[in-house]
Amino acid sequence: MKHATIAEAAFITDANLRSTAKPRRRPIHKMPASFSVAYFAGALVTDLVYWQMPDVMWERFSIWLITVGLIMAGLATIAYVIDLLGGRQIDRPAWPRAVGYALAVLLSLFNAFVHSRDGYTAVVPTGLTLSGLVIAVLILTAGVASALANRRAGA
Amino acid sequence: MMHALRNAGSAKLARRLAALSAAVAVLALAGCDDNGGDPRRQIGANPVLPQLQQYLMPPIRIAKAIGWGSETPTVPQGLQVHALATGFEHPRSLYVLPNGDVLVVESNGPKAPIYRPKDIITGWVQWFAGAKAKDANRITLLRDTNGDGVPELRTIFLDHLNSPFGVALVGHDLYVANTDAIVRYPYEDGQTSITAPGTKLTDLPGGPIDHHWTKTLLASPDGSKLYVGVGSNSNIGENGIGAEYERAAIWEVDRASGAHRIFANGVRNPTGLQWEPETNKLWAIANERDEIGPDLVPDYLTSVRDGGFYGWPYSYYGQHLDPRIMPQRPDLVASAIAPDYALSSHVAPLGLAIYTGTELPANYRGGAFVGEHGSWDRTPLNGYKVVFVPFSGGKPSGPAQDVVTGFLDANNHARGRPVGLAVDRAGALLIADDVGNTVWRVSSAHPGSSPKPGT
Image (cartoon, rainbow over all chains, first blue to last red; front, top):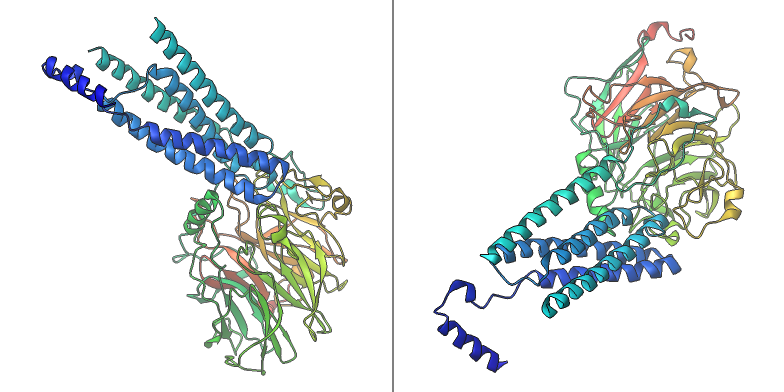
């Protein structure tokens, strides 16, 4: 770790402080985005529990988890724009991740409305399906993004 | 350079995505059909019931509260209306004492807890509709000694109550149904204020949720029993079935002991309990469930059978299943009684007066006036008026007629909203208006010539 820092510092000096060679700052959108994914995953779990045992407590857990997940997604979007404007480091390839994440957030927005229905049909079957779909999209996105990144690295 | 290009590309993509998301969301919301059909198809014994629909976003179509200004409600020819008194704080129900004094119950519901993000939105909507007025928690007395429709005396009759609604006098015992208990006060004829402490007769289901907080009260003709309308604790059981214990029911309370039994249940929000004079049967009005369509479920007026089950939450209008409740109860649904008379959907009946007076024209005799507080989730708006349901042989005998209208202006803003009804000693119809903060009095246009022949 220390080694790397030294090497980088040496590189900057050598490169005569050209702007493109600056060490790019770490992105700030990753943390809120990770939180939102965790909240959406939590909602899938509480939906599954409610499906098996329809106690309103689980449904309330689900809608709050989705709501806070959406708030986090909103923060992540703001942070992503800041990252883009500030020229901060964005994981490559950027667009499959952005598209996949945006789709998951959009589905979660629909899911929040479905979960705001009264009674059993707030979850079963549409809400539960949407919660599952969100997680499926996120997993698929991660898979595609890492496959593309590996291919690029290999090329 | 490369980075800059890529960044610009990403930003463009992000913008496109944002635009796409917004477009999809708007489409989805616009796709919700909240336009209701003709309410007349849902008035009477056999309402047309469409297929139920579930919303992505339930429609909210409330009438913004603007007050009356110099306007008054509209009544048909042969009747006149004027304000008996104004300047109340959310008057919800009325009761006429034997000496003609009018009690105006000024009340609003307790603060609703926030269990879901939706509850925050609901709070804003209610504020917009003028339903978030301070809870005055008192009963005001109006006395009109000479019967000219202008009260000479106005006093605070009872103060420091807890979201009161129903009032019933039996002999010298005055019962007030707070949201959480029936309390008895000693009353002497002509008394204009009560300062004596009350005695609790029985607890009623109250907080912490207390979704339907109004507790209607009616004494049996012999005075031995009190009947209490206890509304459900939710729209459709979304607060758990445990929260509905002894709710969505009409209680029969023994006046001597305070003991109670469930007289009838499965009535989502029963109010306006009245005795039908010809058959001596108990009648009630009820607010049915929301969020399954602009024409579901029609609110109703019905006779109440001892031991009857009227469907909520498992079914509506007999055996029409509601999928929003789990586990279901086919055993109860099999026994569910369809109500007698539909008033059409989302009109929110909250006042009932079966007319036995002589002041109003003869065609109103024996029929029922219903105060319809008005819809909040339907286009076009429905209710916001007082209707009359003619009765014959102790049963509704024809379509409901508009009697008192003009609560909405041309822009669908609410000048007022009718709630509780009562008939005063002279036989005029009194209407509590909880947005206009007024008590209206409807009498014959030519008092000297009444009773007039029916039209």
